[in-house]
Length: 448
Image 1 (cartoon, rainbow, N blue to C red):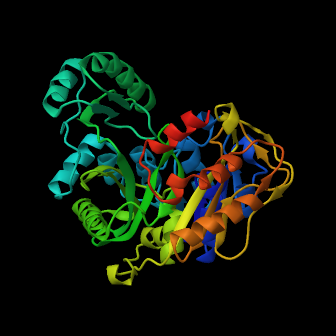
Image 2: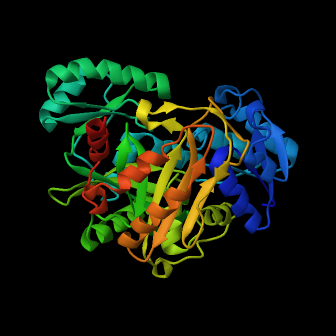
């Protein structure tokens, strides 16, 4: 591997380009018509235009990305997150073109991308799963029968889904009869697969995920992240370590994630996601993300491990250079996702040209972004514009530093969620770490 094509845009493309350069790789950016002047295109050694602004005509066209890699002389492709990152067919196309795919094997992506199959793999590895169906159900009659056995409330989840699509929580059979065709139709539209699975709805649950690294024969964990603060199933704030679990749960959960990785011969960086029942302390595997995560910086700050660099080394054929005994967590890190949205107008996106930008700096403050004065926030892509990530020797210090850092962030010309994040820091329940997956939306409803 000498020349890496980054099949993505925005802050993750910038992040990958920088990691690649640290390792001595040449870099190739891909850019739609709307992104030819974007930061990631400017930072790379070479940029290739891949078509019109809509992602369906550029960043989501595998043939165009593979052709760009071949024509630019790249020998490896990093998919980042989103777009084509978890599409097994894309990984196959990359390798069939004689290029290295920076990620797990296509068969593993396909296996773990299907929630039903992933659940079966987890059970085989002795990893706890939420009580529910072991196979996908295709019709409402089967879903009703499963729900009667599991007991209400239940959750309907798309078997092949992700990103919060095709998910419904139902309290009784009447709701299930109505919700199933809606959820199944949404899943079929989004993923080309309308199968659902039915599982017990865990009330007062935390969403905790374990970062893993594997080289195909060995695997390690890189501790866990707290991801419970979500709006419409999209994460808003993440932190590491989780303030809501004890050392027993941490040890058992991280060990379970490693067992799962070894079960499938996982190779690359990945994330095993769990629900933790606050009332009982039980934890349950829900899915695996076979890519780098948006929130990976909090893990990097508490461990000192460059996860993207590790991905690149593993893709280049190296064995894990880090043993489990080498991985230690120090302090506390929090990530705030800053989006070009207006929180006072129901989070309406605010595309447009960015005016003056001032990014927070100072000790233990990291800002991952593509924002620069004069850049354009496009209406065609995700509204995430920056991630402000803060480290402190403990959670209280990280929170205090977060308030200072967010107060320094200035983005003129477009609305952002910064003011909401500052307001969030003042909430007593947040300061005490007392929240679950429903807390943020409840607070937003009360705030409105």
